[in-house]
Amino acid sequence: MILYPAIDLKDGQAVRLLRGEMDKATVFNTDPAAQARAFEEAGCRWLHLVDLNGAFAGAPVNGAAVEAILAATDVPAQLGGGIRDMATIETWLTKGIARVILGTVAVENPDLVRQAARAFPGQVAVGIDARKGRVATKGWAEETDVMVTDLARQFEDAGVAAIIYTDIDRDGAMGGPNVAATADLARATSIPVIASGGVSSLSDLVALRDTGVIAGAISGRALYDGALDLTQALATLA
Image 1: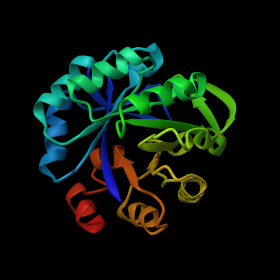
Image 2: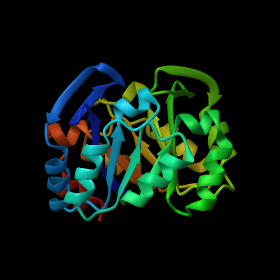
Image 3: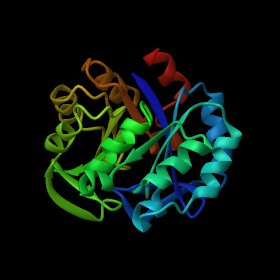
Image 4: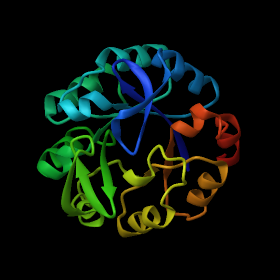
């Protein structure tokens, strides 16, 4: 199971939100590129980047910070937030992002996801963010009636590289991930599932890994707070 350290970008800084609320942001590093280098030096194999402003704006906002991270590191990075058309997908992949994450557009324009996954094999992931099993979009500001498993199954044969599943009520709350719901989703689809939201301790990572069906886990706040030691966590998963 791969551990993805998260760098959430708001106004050019590395922050964490509590349950996705922009007015509950804690700034952890004013230099996201330096933060990315620190994660790389600790041994991570991937980075998880989110343009929070972009998720609300529907277009990239923290592009300069993302480009600085790409310039400062050699590990592959996946990026989500405000990526809602083919031109933006192409731009980021050309600039060196290894994998784009399509969230809102997966609900609103699933054909674009299929088109992108065909055009860029292995480089398109779907971000599914949910409250109580129902998908939320536009930076989690809008809730839909779409069920998580139904959305995932839409892309079963699309060539999507991964599904990043976030339980919004767990995100940034340091209360542990929703292991059961994440494992259920992973069993319901053949697409690799990456867990996000609430991963806050070594035991959380072990619980996710020991399901035997979860491909990866994203952690942010716990790494910044020191509740989870990245080097130790990577060694445990290895």
